[in-house]
Image (cartoon, rainbow, N blue to C red; front, side):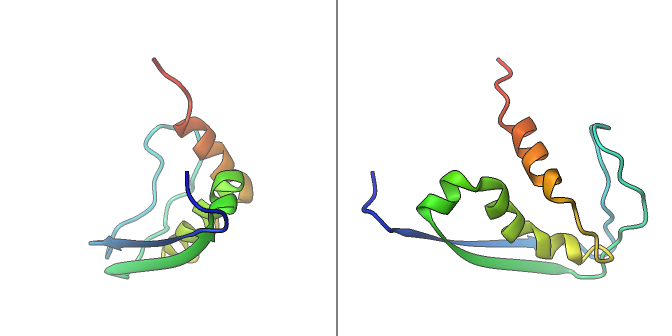
Length: 94
């Protein structure tokens, strides 16, 4: 589909964050309260090879979202958090 060795540039910007807190809306995971951010905006940027995106999706998502989580009182999700959440998101529910 694409030529070998291509890379993907990704930039994510989250705005309107100041005063927001982390929470779990579906009750599948326990997250103690108190993780609040004072940052208004968080932007992350990364460059990934197509092979990394396909084969290491949890690591790719972690690279893009970990800096966001750190703005919530230095919250650090476990490595399994990323793979578990991606598995849940990609379930076929038809």
